[in-house]
Length: 119
Image (cartoon, rainbow, N blue to C red):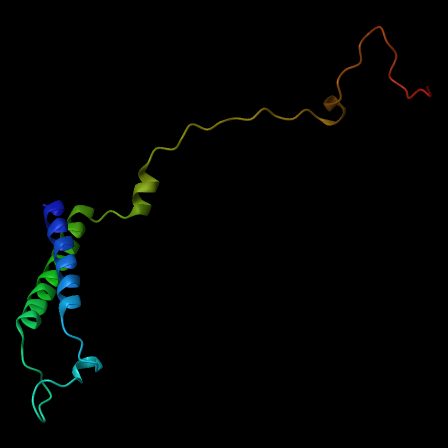
Protein backbone atom coordinates (compact mmCIF):
# COMPACT_ATOMS: atom_id res chain seq x y z
CA UNK A 1 0.00 0.00 0.00
CA UNK A 2 2.81 2.35 0.89
CA UNK A 3 4.49 1.85 -2.48
CA UNK A 4 1.26 2.67 -4.34
CA UNK A 5 0.73 5.89 -2.39
CA UNK A 6 4.39 6.81 -2.84
CA UNK A 7 4.16 6.29 -6.60
CA UNK A 8 1.03 8.46 -6.79
CA UNK A 9 2.77 11.07 -4.64
CA UNK A 10 5.76 11.23 -6.98
CA UNK A 11 3.52 11.48 -10.06
CA UNK A 12 1.55 14.28 -8.41
CA UNK A 13 4.77 16.13 -7.62
CA UNK A 14 5.93 15.93 -11.23
CA UNK A 15 2.52 16.98 -12.54
CA UNK A 16 2.39 19.89 -10.10
CA UNK A 17 5.82 21.08 -11.23
CA UNK A 18 4.76 20.86 -14.86
CA UNK A 19 1.47 22.73 -14.35
CA UNK A 20 3.15 25.51 -12.40
CA UNK A 21 5.79 25.93 -15.10
CA UNK A 22 3.12 26.10 -17.81
CA UNK A 23 1.30 29.00 -16.16
CA UNK A 24 1.79 32.52 -17.39
CA UNK A 25 4.04 34.68 -15.25
CA UNK A 26 2.27 37.86 -14.22
CA UNK A 27 5.32 39.61 -12.85
CA UNK A 28 3.96 40.37 -9.39
CA UNK A 29 4.53 38.02 -6.53
CA UNK A 30 1.81 36.77 -4.17
CA UNK A 31 -1.10 37.49 -6.48
CA UNK A 32 -0.23 41.14 -6.98
CA UNK A 33 -0.17 40.84 -10.77
CA UNK A 34 -2.84 42.21 -13.08
CA UNK A 35 -5.29 40.46 -15.31
CA UNK A 36 -8.32 40.29 -13.07
CA UNK A 37 -9.98 43.56 -13.98
CA UNK A 38 -9.61 47.23 -13.20
CA UNK A 39 -9.60 47.17 -9.39
CA UNK A 40 -10.11 43.57 -8.37
CA UNK A 41 -7.66 41.84 -6.07
CA UNK A 42 -8.40 38.40 -7.47
CA UNK A 43 -7.42 37.18 -10.91
CA UNK A 44 -9.79 35.17 -13.07
CA UNK A 45 -9.59 31.44 -12.33
CA UNK A 46 -8.09 29.68 -15.31
CA UNK A 47 -8.10 25.97 -16.04
CA UNK A 48 -4.41 25.74 -15.13
CA UNK A 49 -5.07 27.57 -11.87
CA UNK A 50 -7.83 25.16 -10.93
CA UNK A 51 -5.69 22.18 -11.91
CA UNK A 52 -2.87 23.55 -9.74
CA UNK A 53 -5.19 23.73 -6.72
CA UNK A 54 -6.47 20.18 -7.33
CA UNK A 55 -2.95 18.78 -7.70
CA UNK A 56 -1.75 20.66 -4.62
CA UNK A 57 -4.64 19.32 -2.53
CA UNK A 58 -3.99 15.77 -3.75
CA UNK A 59 -0.27 16.20 -3.00
CA UNK A 60 -1.06 17.24 0.58
CA UNK A 61 -3.45 14.31 1.01
CA UNK A 62 -0.84 11.82 -0.17
CA UNK A 63 1.77 13.44 2.07
CA UNK A 64 -0.46 13.03 5.10
CA UNK A 65 -1.37 9.46 4.17
CA UNK A 66 2.32 8.55 3.78
CA UNK A 67 2.97 10.01 7.22
CA UNK A 68 0.13 7.98 8.73
CA UNK A 69 1.30 4.77 7.03
CA UNK A 70 4.87 5.33 8.25
CA UNK A 71 3.64 5.94 11.79
CA UNK A 72 1.63 2.70 11.75
CA UNK A 73 4.60 0.72 10.46
CA UNK A 74 6.83 2.12 13.19
CA UNK A 75 4.70 0.49 15.92
CA UNK A 76 6.02 2.77 18.64
CA UNK A 77 9.57 1.47 18.52
CA UNK A 78 12.35 3.97 18.29
CA UNK A 79 15.74 3.38 16.74
CA UNK A 80 17.37 3.52 20.15
CA UNK A 81 15.08 0.75 21.41
CA UNK A 82 16.15 -1.42 18.49
CA UNK A 83 19.80 -0.83 19.35
CA UNK A 84 19.43 -1.82 23.00
CA UNK A 85 17.38 -4.93 22.17
CA UNK A 86 19.97 -6.24 19.73
CA UNK A 87 22.17 -9.02 21.09
CA UNK A 88 25.64 -7.93 22.04
CA UNK A 89 28.53 -9.35 20.02
CA UNK A 90 30.68 -11.87 21.89
CA UNK A 91 33.31 -10.20 24.00
CA UNK A 92 36.78 -10.51 22.58
CA UNK A 93 39.47 -10.95 25.17
CA UNK A 94 42.88 -9.53 24.53
CA UNK A 95 45.92 -11.22 26.02
CA UNK A 96 47.40 -9.48 29.01
CA UNK A 97 50.75 -7.75 28.56
CA UNK A 98 53.70 -9.23 30.43
CA UNK A 99 55.19 -7.28 33.27
CA UNK A 100 58.33 -5.12 33.11
CA UNK A 101 61.43 -6.77 31.57
CA UNK A 102 59.53 -9.63 30.02
CA UNK A 103 58.96 -7.53 26.91
CA UNK A 104 62.58 -8.11 25.90
CA UNK A 105 63.32 -11.39 24.14
CA UNK A 106 65.11 -13.85 26.39
CA UNK A 107 68.81 -14.24 25.78
CA UNK A 108 69.99 -17.45 24.21
CA UNK A 109 71.83 -19.79 26.58
CA UNK A 110 75.20 -20.02 24.77
CA UNK A 111 75.94 -16.37 23.95
CA UNK A 112 76.71 -13.41 26.08
CA UNK A 113 74.45 -10.36 26.05
CA UNK A 114 74.98 -8.12 23.09
CA UNK A 115 77.26 -5.16 23.65
CA UNK A 116 78.09 -2.50 21.14
CA UNK A 117 81.37 -3.12 19.37
CA UNK A 118 83.53 -0.62 17.54
CA UNK A 119 84.19 -1.99 14.07
